[in-house]
Image 1 (cartoon, rainbow, N blue to C red):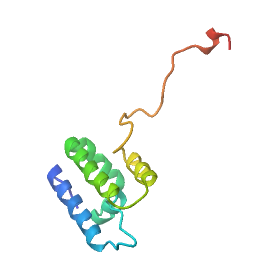
Image 2 (image 1 turned 30 degrees about the vertical axis):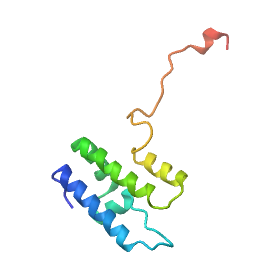
Image 3 (image 1 turned 180 degrees about the vertical axis):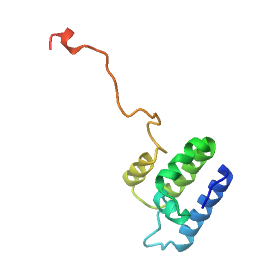
Length: 110
């Protein structure tokens, strides 16, 4: 699937989530997720994540779709939290993965 607009992305995600709901069993619900969507759309996860730069506001809405699906899936809160943080939909949204501290600990007598 090729996404030429954010609206097409959201439409495809909505179709995927609806398909998951239709196939879901009450005893074992299907957890609509990013990896499953990528499989459905035939794209790598890295390509999906790259759409954040191409369609930033629609990507945020996509996050809300996945968040809603996850929260209503019956999965545990810890699983949902871990999953949403994994893809940057919850938690620190900064691109920096390291922290710099300019304090000299040796000046404290260490």
